[in-house]
Amino acid sequence: MTRVNAHVAGWLLLLPAVAFLALFTHWPAVATLIDSFHSTPRGRRPAAFVGPDNYAVMIDDPVFWQSVSNNLWFAVGTIPVSIALAILMALWVNDRLAGRTWLRTAYFTPTVLPMIAVANIWLFFYTPQYGLLEQVTGLFGAPSHNWLGTPDTALACVIVVAIWKEAGFFMIFYLAALQQIPPSLAEAAALEGASRGYYLRRIVLPLLMPTTMFVLINAVINAFRMVDHIIVMTRGGPDNATSLLLFYIYEVGFKFWDTAYAAALTMVLVVVLGAVALAQYLFLERRTHYQ
Image (cartoon, rainbow, N blue to C red; front, side, top):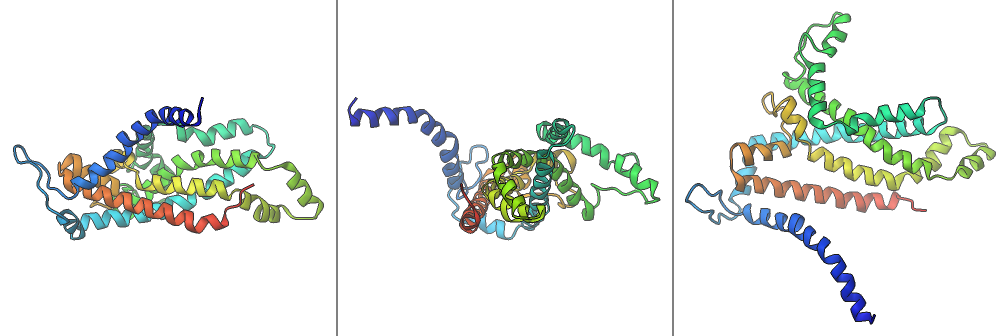
């Protein structure tokens, strides 16, 4: 086979994957960008070019800014806690302890549960007067509280559910990374008289940085694409206290049927995620150590 034929054969092998990627990823993004500069078609009235009008409406939309603020707090509350718990759980189940297989299974079980089922389980925990949380706090004489129906606590309750669901998933990546660290490093550190904390801080954590960067990118994406358990647990309430950006896009697009405005909101979400991912690569790449 000549060199030209080899190149042609290679591109032909890539063609199905490239076609699917363009059809289901790139073209929807381009179509959404185009729709964001048009009005929503109504009946026999086709979509008309309106320029940046949808983005101007967005600037004056208080619910949009409330959703952005909620999403930022949601990300701040879920990302560092989920990653820290994942590292702690991975370090624990990586040690030689009795029943570690069952412990790994227990940590990973929330990950394989459907989010709709998880949301319904936690709905029982948060039910006023009868829920598990109410039963526990009642033992200490605390008054009954509507956890999901109060703006001050609703978002925090949703954050707890997300952490419970995601920490076990991130643990699997850290556990795999820990098992790739040569045992000779621990032996050498022990011979040099290094404490376990020093070994963890100066050797283990730097070697986990590639995994941390990967997990961090996924955690950010998860924080901004959360919508299913919001629909089940709060539907964005009370008073938009738990309305996240993707949930607001869902409501605008499928409840209010304003697809053009939903397209503009989607483009903002895409730009935000792209900027965050780029910033992570630029600033974390220097602190990432590859073998």
